[in-house]
Length: 151
Length: 151
DNA sequence: TCATATTATTTGTAAATTACAACTATTTAT
DNA sequence: ATAAATAGTTGTAATTTACAAATAATATGA
Image 1 (cartoon, rainbow over the protein chains, first blue to last red):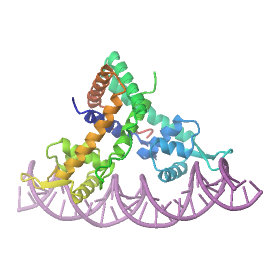
Image 2 (tube, rainbow over the protein chains, first blue to last red; image 1 turned 90 degrees about the vertical axis):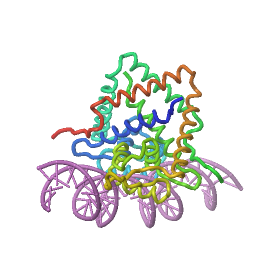
Image 3 (tube, each protein chain N blue to C red; image 1 turned 60 degrees about the horizontal axis):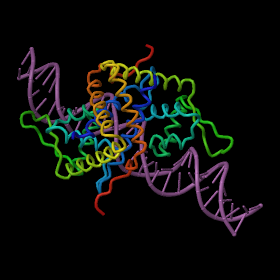
Image 4 (cartoon, helix red, strand yellow; image 1 turned 120 degrees about the horizontal axis):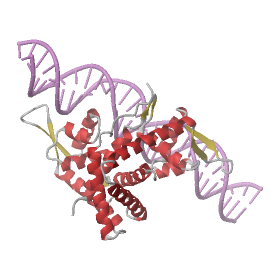
């Protein structure tokens, strides 16, 4: 068989590069992780800090500081939860929403362009494949444990 | 249509997390980018610094320092090219090769597990899809330019 | 109910990562 | 031979990261 990692590595690297380059919009300059944070907040409904940091596999302390930056930039709003005042609820400001949407549109525009090199059937197949892959990855138990070799 | 970015984002994040957690092997601890560097050197035949840094979309100065670290760890060898002494040729040491192979095997093991949740036919389809996607991404012209909005 | 444990988030601190600008060394072009 | 271009390194400073410890609020148990 061929090396599957090769395929994945190439694909995710390309997508990663794309993401990296989609982070400067007008005079707002955000980092790659910040764009991921915006994405994740946008996707959810008033998530807590923990929820988002966990979704992104980020240390909560690192995340806390990134959120502080995004709040300073006026892209994210932090609201204490009345029921549990330890928790802060995250949401995008109007500008944050604008940035997130612009990045999203740009990436989809790129994907459209990529898919334009395929037939409609191929496109459907690829999309269905990625969906299936995501489902199976979610099922997997192996993922995400550090390797230990020897003692 | 559904949001394609969502699909890609989820997939690449999962794969990214996996990569991140595959970098501690025995008493050698390398970072995610370092593992990518090892991968890329392993894949090529005595590449130059520029070639690898470009492939990874890394600034050459950052790359230079990372290579210094990897040389210090005894994982990478830097050999001056006789024909052009400005150029350094990169290769893996025995231990570097071992680390790269171990990471590779671990990631493939994970992918095998993921594919075990599919039928053989689905697996074939998914692999073919990703190949196709990679080809089309390579064709694309849109990729990797920073967004500029307004002036 | 009061003390204790747990949970969510922040801050202290220090190391690792990053990248711009300026530099060295070598090669190519005029 | 001199200038321009190329490959890589270092100065420096900002950003990102994460461990440990702190704070603040809630849940639990005698």
